[in-house]
Image 1 (cartoon, rainbow, N blue to C red):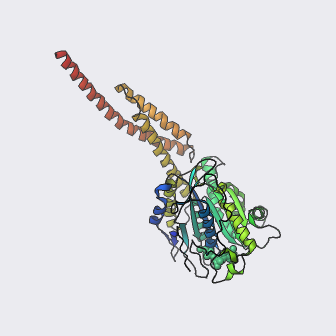
Image 2: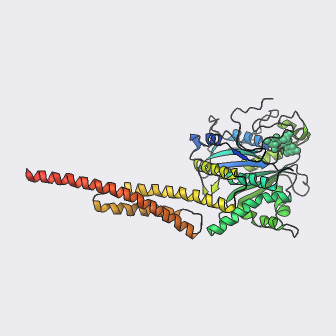
Length: 449
Ligand code: GDP
Ligand code: MG
């Protein structure tokens, strides 16, 4: 069976070795993220995460069908951009078309654990705002089995949450108590963030969706996103006296961590999909209800109005900026443990502030170099103008950290501006001195004549 896809392939950016060391491949990541077409685009990253043989790749391959049917991509630019999104109801393709994409195959061989990213990136322009976005798809295989500790699972879940803007957690049959534990990182991070920044708004993560396969309790909760939402709110989030304290606090705070939380229930797909060794993924072999619900759920996740943009500290970042964060996150996770919340917070804060300081310095330089210097006395005026512009930019931007940290970064900025000014002043003063000398010589010459 040929599983090669005409436009892309899964690229491994992170794997766990057998002794659970993290191995990161930055070159591949660079290749995808450095594509010139997407540098300034905003980012959507859909990450599907879950245990081996949970039907993740199968689901993602149908997501790819949806995306290829509706959007051009960097490897398939010929598809025209839809200025106004029109849904193609036949996006699932032909009934007997074998499934291609993320190494999808039936069989029981255990695959590598880690993060795979689809090598092709989809391009879309949001109707309402005109924002240009790049859509990335990620397949994250956790250990989630008997020989892995909760820390292993939490670690990979934390990484997925930090990287993605839509985090889909793929689960079998129901949400189990211990699976909520994976959310602890996110809720802790959110609480820490809110406390440090002194505000309770601005949730650090965007969309979290539980995707539950082989749902059986359909008499109480119907299939799809509506039944799922109801199930999640009525059965999962409810705090009971029997809950361990850490799971209680996760329940309490999960809503402060994600801007949106959803849950989708999918039926059992039928014997062919679930069991047959030779099944190639075609939809003609799916149970009718499953096929309809699969279509519905993927549309629910990926219709343009659902595409949640990646934000860090409440700001929508471009591909080139997100890349830097992802590389640093991967590096932080290489050490083994989940980085402690304060470490991660400090790291995001520093990246954030160094970005802002860079932008303010550019602003300052534009201010002084564009200032019309007529006399030497104008030099300090140029500095004043530049400083005004830079400070305004600094004050306007949403910053992380407490007052003391904000002050300290402002101090750093001012130091840098003074250094640049010193140099600017020396150059300009020399220039005026030269000009004066020339003028003086000219005057003497005129006098002598
Ligand atoms: P992954 O390891 O999570 O990526 O799982 P795969 O996508 O490779 O699928 C593993 C097996 O599960 C394949 O034989 C699929 O046909 C089957 N499968 C796909 N979706 C479902 C589902 O919703 N329920 C069940 N029971 N099996 C599924
Ligand atoms: Mg897979």
